[in-house]
Amino acid sequence: MIMKKMMMSAFAVLLLAVPTLQAQKVNKSALLSKIEKSDAEVADAKKSAKAATWLNRGKAYYEAAVEPTKSLFGNMESPMVTLAVGEPESKGTETIGNATYETWVYPYFTAYFQDGKLIAWKETDKVIDNGIAKAFEAYGKAYELDPKTAPKVKAGLDQLINHCKQLGDVSYTVHDFTKAGYAFAQAYDMGAHPACNTPEPMLLYNAGVSMTIDGSEHPESFKAGEEYLTRALDAGYNDSEGRIYYYLFHCYYGQRAENPDMVMKAKDALLKGVEKYPKNDLILQGLMQLYTSEENVGDPAELVTLVDNAIAADPTNIDLWFGRGRIFYALKNFDESIASFRKVTELQPDLFEGYYYLGLFYIFKGDDANQQFNEQQFNNQAAYDAGLKEVNAIYMEAVPLLERALELKPNDFDTVNSLKQLCFRLRDEEGIMAKYEKYNALYNQLKGE
Image 1: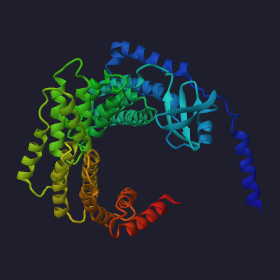
Image 2: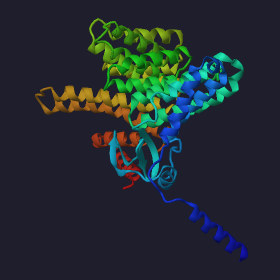
Image 3: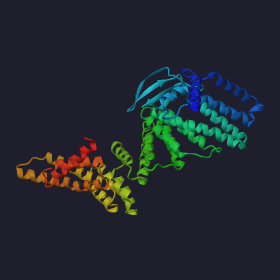
C-alpha cells in the first residue's frame, strides 16, 4: 500500500513537470549563430587547416538542417507528435493520389496522418538552405585534411544518410518526387564516400524511379532519372523483375522531343531488359508501344526473332516461353500465344500462371472468333448453330485449364471469377450449368456475400 502511494505521488510529480503544450519552437538564431562561428573559423587560415574545424562545421550544418523534423518518425501516434513538436497552427485534410490524409500544419512542415498515425511530412520552411549538402561537404573536407578522422566522419555521414533516406521516403509518399529523388541520390553518394564505403545501389534506383515519375509532370526530370538509373546499373543494381529497364526506357523516351536519338536508346533499354527478363509485362508493353507508335523503330516481328533465338539456345527456359506467349498476345496471334503457354505447362506442370494464362488466351481467342461470328450473315439456322458451336468449342478449351489453375491456387478470386463468367456463357453445354452453380457459389463466398 505504501509502495502504491509512493508511485502515485511520483506520477503526480511527473504530470506537474510536463509543460503546457505550445506551438513548435525552433531556436533558429542559435543554430545560425553556430554556423556564423564556423564561417569565421574556416575563414581563418590556421583554423581552416584543421580537420576538427570541418567536423564541427559538418555537425553545425546537420543540426540546422534536421532541427525542425528531428523528433519525427513514421507511424508516430498523433499524441506523441503533439508532445514532440507542440500543437499545430491548423488542421485539415488533403488528398494525394488515391489517399486522403489528416494534415497538421506547423511553421516548418506539414504532417500527414492516417488512422491517428504519422505517415509522412512535407518540409515547408528551413533554418538554412542546402544544409545537408554543406554538412556533407564539410565532412568530406575533414577527411581530406586528415584521413585518420574517418571514424568521426563516418559517424557524421551515417546521421546524414539516415536523414536523407527518411526524407526520400516521406517525400515520395506525399508525391514530392523531385525532393525524394535528390534525397535518395544524396544518401547514395554519402554511403559511397571512402569514410563509409557502404554504397547502396538501390538508393540510386529509388532516385531514378522518383525522377521518372516526376517526369510525367516535369519533363526535365527525365534527364536526372536517366543519370541515376544508369549509375545504378553501373553500380551492379538489378531489381528482381528488371523494372529498372522499363523506367530507363521512359527516361530516354521522355527526352525524344529535344533529342530524337533518344527513341533508339529507349528501344535498346527495353531490348536489354526483355533479354534478361522476358516475363516482365511492363517491358513487353513498352516494346509494343514503341514499335507501334514510332516510325523507323522496326518490325514487331523482331521481338519474336529475339526471343526465338534465345529459346533455341535455352529451350527449357520457362521465362522465355512465357515472354514469347505475351509477345504473340500483344500481336493478337492467339494460336502462337497458346502454343507458347502449352510449352510452359509442359516444362512446369505445377505452375499456376502457366494454366491461368493458357486458359485466358483460349478465352481471348474465343472472343476474337465470337466477334467474327457476330459480323457474319447466315442464311439458315443450321449454319448459325454450326458457327456458334465452333466458337463455343474454343471457349470450352479454357474450362479445364482454369480449373487446373484453381487446383494449384485454391480460392484465387480472379480464376474463380473467370470460371464463373465462362461457365455462364457455356451454360447450355453438357455438364457446364453445374459448374456455373459451383463457381458462382464460390465467387459469392469469396466476396463475403
